Structures are given as C-alpha cells and as structure tokens.
Length: 213
Image (cartoon, rainbow, N blue to C red; front, side, top):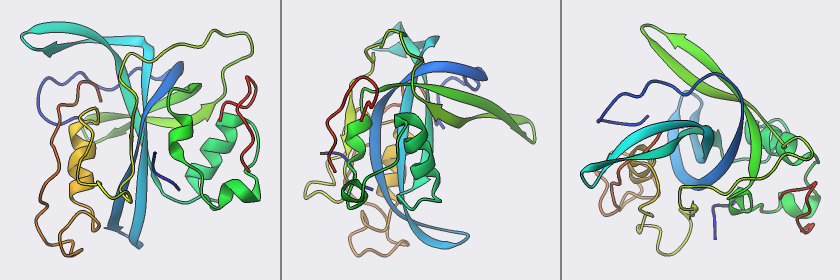
C-alpha cells in the first residue's frame, strides 16, 4: 500500500535537461510532518525516471546506465488549490470524485507514464531542475516500463521504520527526520532505525487507457 493523501555525495551529474520529456513515476513516499515557514505540514514526494536522459552510475565496481531521475515534493493535501491536486488532475485529465477525495492512494500512479515539463532555475552559482507541469501522454505514444524497481512507502503503516531500499538517500533521511519517525514525536530528537540507501539517480473509477489512475 502506498501513502494516502538532491542527491547527496558522489559524482555531481548536474541537473536533468530542461524541456518536455516522457517520464514514468517509479516511486511514491509519505515524508511525514516537517516544520517550515508556515508551520508543520505533512509532505509527500513523487519520483520519476526520464528514459530519454541517461547517466552512467557506479555500482558494485562497474558503471551501469540508468535513466535520470527527478522528483517533486508536495504538501500531502488534495485541497483543490494544492499543487498535488493540480498536478494529479492535469496528469489524469479529470477531477477527483468525492469518494477519491476521502483517501487517494498515491501508489496508484506508480508505473504510470506521463509527460513532464522540466524548467531550470538558477540560484547563486547552482542550476536546479524543477517539474513545472505533469501531463498525460499524447494519444498513440507507446508506454514504457520503468527501469528502476517500483517503490511505495507509507509512513502511516505499522512497519513504517522499514524504509524500502529503492528510495533515494535524501528521501530516506527526510523520512527519518520527520516528527512521526522520531521516538517521541519531538522534531529535536535524533532519528533511530530506518535505512540509508544509495541514490542512483536524483470513487474508485477503474483505470482505462484514457484515465491512467
């Protein structure tokens, strides 16, 4: 079950190329509650691979070719003005039913193809790649199978401390830093348990070809 609603260290591959690309969502995760400018908010993340963009990544002493990855972090809310709601509605091409709004499982988008528009933002001496829009594939475009293993993590599940190995290291660390993951729920406590993993990259309507999830 999925979560209902920067790469660190190693070689610097730079940001993914800007533009519109076919992509596949291969991971979803609830990141837990984090305190920001506007107070504590529950967050989640969607992670996509971009088959058209490849990098060579060291693994077990050899270099393997993998698609570039890009993610987008959201406040975990399906309020009609939220970024998550807007992106999911744009992606699937229809609004959510009242039934779905009671608890939409983000795992429904795992393995689903889309088109993403990537824009570059320059801050200081660094260039960051951000997902500006998520759209359905144009009709007739072949769907691709993800290279990365499909991973879905729900921080509200009973075994939430068993973080899947397929999540990037920065996602694992953010989960461990959440209020839910701390033994007392105190954000100043040190995280325990969990698993730091290498980041190789950076209603109920049944699914149809036109409505992917």
